[in-house]
Image (cartoon, rainbow, N blue to C red; front, side, top):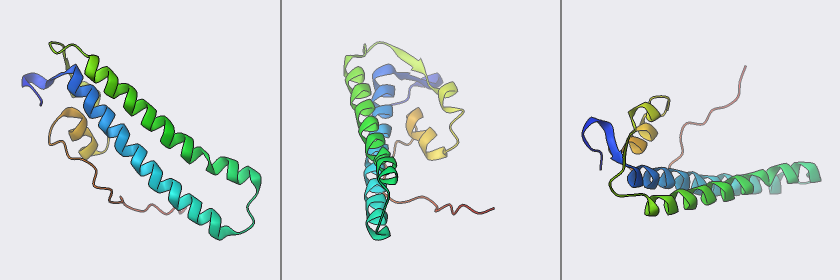
Length: 121
């Protein structure tokens, strides 16, 4: 998929970005289920907390919408247009994400969890 000197067809870049967002939407669904389970176990929950928990659903829907949008742009992109993706991925701190977005070793997310970060002082 990647071409010489970090050039990738714009359609491919958009397709990869759309896939990344779609994966994030799926992870959002999983987080949503966890939140629902935790809220269900909490017992008496304030309406304000429930409303704030619904933000996870909105996040998932927006990610899925953005993925669909980028996917449609990918299909409409001119086949002869390319872009250098190297500068765009330099600021990405997750190596596997940077590799996927740059077209190197594109690996679909397998649904496994990352490290659990417990918030401690």
